Length: 337
Image (cartoon, rainbow, N blue to C red):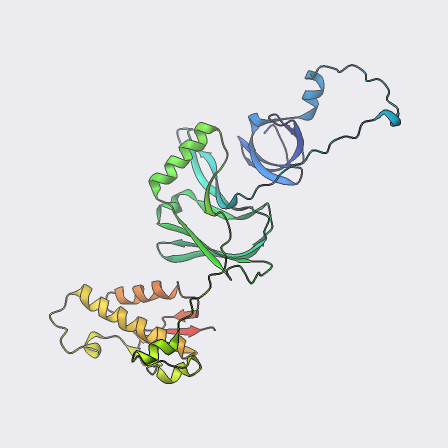
C-alpha cells in the first residue's frame, strides 16, 4: 500500500493538505482535510513533498514594510443547507477471477444543515429489526452508522430514521420520520454510476428542511352539539371507550359463528382486525400488558402480529414462549408509556 495511516497528503484537485486516517481498501483511503473526513481514491491524492520538487520556484518577493501592507480579504467559506442524507460507500474485494466485486457498504448519515439532530436509526430486513442505534449528529457533519454486507441488501432492506431537534423549538415538529427502501436494480445502477464517475460514495436525500409544527385545526364543538352529535369531554374519554381486555383469543370460532365457508385470507383478515382493535384499546386504557392467543398452526397469524408489534412505539417488548395455559400459542406484550 502506497499510504499508511498518519501520512500527510495533498488533494490534487484543491491543493489542500491533509492526512490519511484510515485505509479503506487497495484503491481508497479515508482522509481528513481541515477537520472534514471523506474517502478519496489514490489517484486523487499525493505526497506533499512531490509538489515541492515539481513546482516552479517563485521569484523572491521584495520586502514590504508594514505601513504599505494592504488589508487582506478573508476567504469566506459558505456552507449551504442542502439537507440530511444517507450515504453508501461500496467496499470492493477480489473474486476468484480477480475481478472487483462489492463486498460490503459503509453507511453514513450526513447532515448538511446548520441544525443538530437527535436520531434513532433502524435497519429492517424483511420486516425484522436487524440493527438499531440512537445518537446525535452535529451541523455540517457526518456520522458513521455501521457496515452492511452486500448480499444482505437483497433481503428487502428498509433504512428507517426518527429525527428530533437537539435543541427543541416550539415552532418545529417534535419529531420527523424518514425511510428508504432500496431495490436490487436501483442498487446495481448506483454502483455502476459511482464507478463511471470515479466517485467513492452515493447518497439519498432523507429531507431538505426539518418540518414546522402542524397546528391542529380547532372544531367548533357547539355547532356539532346543536346538530345532534354527541360531544364527549376529552378528560373523561375513558368513560366512553369500550372496555379493554388483558387476554384476547383470536381463534376464529371465538370471533364469528359462520366461519367454515371463509377462505384462509378472510379468516386472517378478521383475526388481525380483532387484534388491532384490542391493541388500541389496551394502549388507550394504559394497560401494562396484553396477551394475544393466536394458536400454533402454520404460524402465519403469529408472524403477522409480530410484524405489526415491531412498528409500534408503545411496545416495550413481546415474547412468544411456552406457558402452561397456552403452550406456544400465545404472545405476551408489554407496554411502555
